[in-house]
Amino acid sequence: MVPGARAPAASVLRGLVALAGAAVLWFSGAAEARVLLTLDDFGAVGDGIANDTQAFVDAWTAACGSEEQAVLAVPVAKAYQIWPVQLSGPCKKKLKLLIAGTIVAPASPDEWAGRDPMKWLYIYGVDGLSVSGGGTIDGVGQEWWARSCKRKKTQALHFEECRGVSVQGVTLQNGPQFHLSFTRCTDVKANFLRVVAPADSPNTDGVHLNDSSRVQITDNLISTGDDCVSMVGNCSDVRVRDISCGPGHGIRI
Ligand SMILES: *[C@@H]1O[C@H](CO)[C@@H](O)[C@H](O)[C@H]1NC(C)=O
Ligand SMILES: *[C@@H]1O[C@H](CO)[C@@H](O)[C@H](O)[C@H]1NC(C)=O
Ligand SMILES: *[C@@H]1O[C@H](CO)[C@@H](O)[C@H](O)[C@H]1NC(C)=O
Image 1 (cartoon, rainbow, N blue to C red):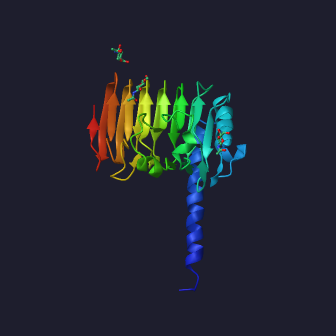
Image 2 (cartoon, protein in one colour):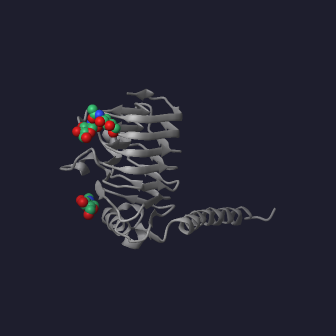
Image 3 (cartoon, rainbow, N blue to C red):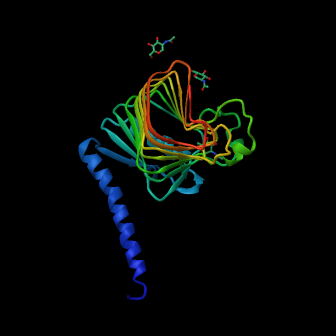
């Protein structure tokens, strides 16, 4: 065995991982997407410390207004700190949000001062958005849990008034409370997700539905402090299948 043989092996592996990441874009690009935009194109830093909110908003505006189908990518191996934002539709074409890296919330609930706690990544009025990419949405909920008893439910990734939205193959972790919410949405898929928060974190629901219909929630691993799936209001045609759920409270209707 040559001394130092491990280092080249590791870098070959990294190269393959990078290649696999590029291939995903390549194939989806050939099949349906014409334009690839990344947060970095709009000045995001991606060090987990800088405020990349405006870059995210600018990238969304460009992707959503694109005349050709766009992929908006959150680059792999980087972390983008995002303050509460509203990203609005409708978009000109179907949009793909490819989260390969990490989106992190500011750690302190004080950063929400004067803002609606129900909205961190708040996506309003979209039709035909898919979220995928294998990355992570980290709500950094630790300080929220320590100060529990908030009246309004904080919602990490929250869609309102949406149609044809799918969220697949990403990790949602340590949400202040609800991890993924749909309010007044139809034709929704939430599949192949990992949703994780500590067992003792208060009110950390996995997927929350409010006044939504035609919803598929399948093949998810949900391990949070409260309900895996909860529903309020007028929800219909909701299919929940193959969910690994625990140690929280299961499914609440
Ligand atoms: C981060 O940027 C967003 C958007 O420009 C802004 O609303 C927010 O207040 C900024 N946060 C800080 C701490 O500067
Ligand atoms: C359900 O959605 C309505 C708006 O459509 C809102 O007023 C209400 O607070 C929501 N309830 C929950 C528990 O999220
Ligand atoms: C509940 O939702 C269904 C499907 O969206 C709709 O047809 C029905 O009118 C709603 N019922 C009420 C009481 O709002």
